[in-house]
Each structure stands twice: as C-alpha cells, then as structure tokens.
Image (cartoon, rainbow, N blue to C red; front, side, top):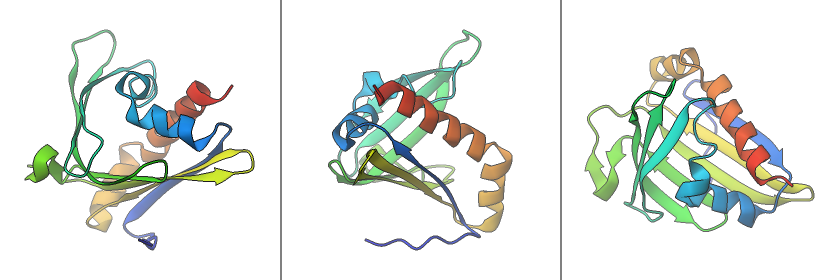
Length: 156
C-alpha cells in the first residue's frame, strides 16, 4: 500500500524516535503504555478497548482537570502489520460498525532508522473543510505533543 499525500485533505506528523521499532510499537499496542502518552498532558487517557486486529476496537476516554473520564476516540483498526503499520478510522467502530460522525483515518508507520524509529502519522480527511477543522482544533499541537510524549516514554 502506497498512499499518496493529498495536501488538501491530509495532515502529517513525522519524527525520528531514538528507540527500536519494537519498543515504539509496544507503546502503541499495549494499553497501559498507550495511556501514558496518547492525550496531551496534563489530561489523562484511559483505554476502554484496544483490540489490535483488523475490525478491532480502539476506544479511549479522557479526563481533564481531574474530572470524570469522558469519550475521546471510538475507532476501528483497518490494518495491522506488526512492527510496521497501524491503520485506524473513526468512520467505523469496532466490529466494522458504521460510526455516527466519521472524521478521519490515520495511517501510523514505523520503520528502522539508524537512530531508532522513523515514525510517521498520516491523518486523512474526507474533504478540505474537515481537514481545516482538524487544524483549527489543534492537530499540530495535539499530535505533535503526543509524538513528543511517546518519544519521552520510549527513549532511554
């Protein structure tokens, strides 16, 4: 699969993480590790479901200012290639059920790099308005912050 970047519809975050691919992959696929970096601090994340398989659910909840946990992401994994790629979308829920309000599909890739892992997130949207809404909601700050939190968790 070779997805072409469409700058009118897509957003990306890339960085080199100074840790082996297996370590970064584990931080993405282990609920207890995922909770430590997935949402920008100081907000807290709780994984309600994480079934790492095509059709599996990815459901997270968020707590801000020590408040109750509230829904954050309800998504479905479309593709899982261990140590190489995860694709998920919130256009579907776990079990391939259609979601009420689709917003994006994310392709997360992991590749060996001389310094550790070449980490890339490609986030695709259905139209330019949806992409622009994601930018206005803070895509670069949010996804950039969580990539930094991921790196801090796994880099030694």
